Length: 236
Image 1: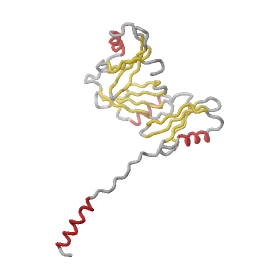
Image 2: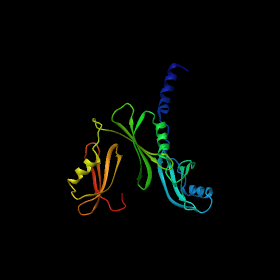
Image 3: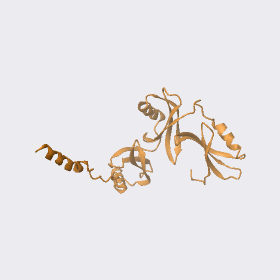
Image 4: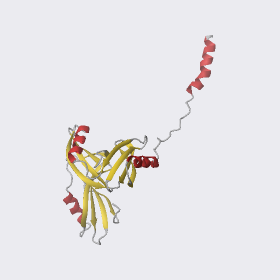
C-alpha cells in the first residue's frame, strides 16, 4: 500500500474510530421483593409470627430491609436483609438494647483516632438508637455524630460538623431563656441535641402561651432559630 493510499485509508477510518459507543442504559439496582423476604422470615421462625413494621433504610452504607415482628410468645425480634441480594445480615431479639459498652467498643475500633464526647440512648422517629458524639483526636472543632441501631449495633447515620472557632455551644438553659423572650409562658415538654444539615442543633418541644404545641430548632453555636413550627400531637 502506497503512502498516499494509507493516508486516505486513515482519513476514512477516523470518523468510525471517533464515533462514540452506544450509551448503555443505566438501570437501578434490583431490589428484592418484600413478599419474598417476609416468606423467608415465616419459614425460619417456628409458630405464628406477626409483622409489626417493615422499612427500607440506608444502613452501614447499603440499602437494607429492617423487619420487626413478634412470635407466638409476644417476643419482639428484628431481622435485617440486604435489599439487593436478599441475604440476611442480622437477626436479633429486641427484649433489651445492646449494652452501651459493646456499642462503644465497636465505635472505638472503627474510629481509633477519635475521642468520645457523649453517648446516650434516645428514641428517634419511633426507633431506639444510641447517639454517640466524637471529637477528632488532633483537629480541634471537628465533630462526628453517629446514630446506631440500639439492638443490632449497626450504623444508621453519620454526620460531620464543625464547632465555632471558640469550640463552645450555647447551653440548653440559655437557648430556653432566649425562646422565653418570644413565648413567656412556654412549658417545655422535651429537648434533644442532634445534627441537621451538618449543623449541631438543639430541638425544644413546648407549649406556648395558648397551649399550642411547637417544635423549635436552634443552631447550638449561634443561637439562631432555624425552625419554629406548630406540631400536632404525635407528629414529632
